[in-house]
Amino acid sequence: MMAAWELKRSYDDAYARTSVRLQNNALLVGEWVKGVFQTSDYLLRDVVANFPPSELKLARTSAQQQGRWVHWLDAKRQTLPHANSLGLFDPTCIRRYTHDARFQSYFDASERDYCRMLRERPGAESVVTPMAMSNFGRYAVAQARRIPGPGAMGSGFAVIGLDTTMFSALLDRIDTGSDGVITLIDYRQQVVARKPALAGVIGKSLNRPMVQAFIDGDVDVRVSQHISQLDGQPQLGVFRKVEGLPLIVYQGEQDRVWLQDWYARAWQIGLAALLLLIVAALLLRGHWVQLAQAIRLEQDIVQRQRLEDELKANELALRQARDAAQAANRELQLVNSQLSSMATTDTLTGAWNRRHFEQELQRELIQSQRYGEPLSLLMFDIDHFKAVNDRYGHPVGDAVLVGLTRLVQLNLRAADTLARWGGEEFVIMMPHCGADEAAGLAEKLRALLALHPFEGVGQVTASFGVAQCSPEDSPQSWLKRADLALYQAKAEGRNAVRLVA
Image (cartoon, rainbow, N blue to C red; front, side):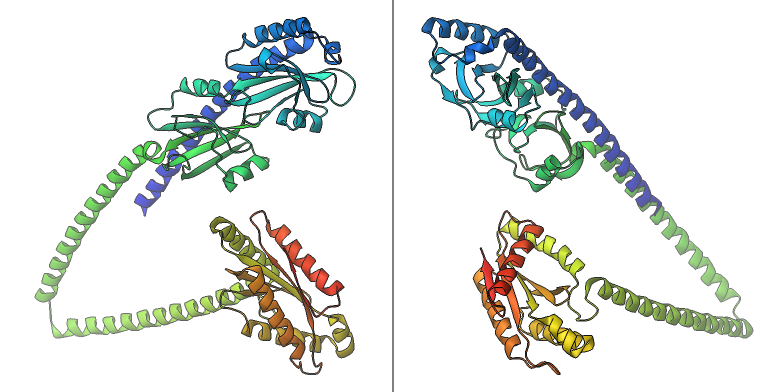
């Protein structure tokens, strides 16, 4: 027990130390990245401050005027290493001037990220975009600064394109050790830079739900122990958002490195424990030998009888204690089973309750979207059920709900699950089942219910809505589509099945 506690304590210490170190390193890298964009923003501020906005309003400009601004912009661009483009745009996102005379024809950038972000953030003076392929056939990150002026887009804006190789050069200057990893990722989960470099990685999209949840969430740092999607190595890593930028710094270290001292400690503790067991076994063997010799020397009839009586008494006490423990264990198992059933099932019908169904729905949806297996949802409720309660009373209505549940469960597949969603409304989850098959089951259930005589009431009907989950669905959107199909069935006369795409 002490050995296990010591191993856990040393593992937790190694995990905590490594997490703090990786977080500090990621913070340092993030500050360096922010410094790069601060430098490029200084250049944009200089361009915005010294360029006359009236030049962006001219309908036509002379070749001499174009040449003067081309030369001026190119001179500014060359002051910043890794800057591959520098341009000026009017408020309608039309490029009017650029550093390269080959690209002086007017270019409409309305669909580019920097134009869209400036339109969507009228209060922002400067924006930085995720990585994209530039007109020069290289990956680049764009930074734009608004030119002050009237209107939502001001007098226009200046844009500088930064070649992402500068980030690779920045990471190369950082000591990550023999098996450390630093990766720069943008908010589209694209790999911007990585050390050590891997062929074909730059521009690759990770497309990981965990990373997307971190991007969408409110926390700035996340620690994760996982297998790397890029090199397949198990590692401990830290994701840290770069403040004010659409970028994430990932700092990781392979398990075999950060756990190296713990592995050695585990061997030491394991060897010590083995030696202790050997010594204890030898001591116990010697004790039993001595005890046997003493018994043989001092045996007599009276002593033997006393020992037998004591042994019988001990056996009786042990048997009684064992029986009591077994009875208590059986009672505890029964209580646990009852509590588990109460937590997951509806007390009236015996079907799953809504809370348990929502938990399983989330799990099945993730499985379906991960492996591409079809998964369908069937939602239904009893038509005019309030009239049944009003006319025959709630006990009769409850009996109808119980009878309906048993009838439906008898006609489901083994993999299907039925839950009471609320009142007279039920929902069925059907793994490995497409929309057409689900709609067929719904029609079968609708017909069975319409023909089944319920005691004291007669026949009742139900309306059904069917929806198959899509790769974009969340639990809420999927349930909403099934509910919409149910609403259509009711709106079109009830006692019907409707399927939504």
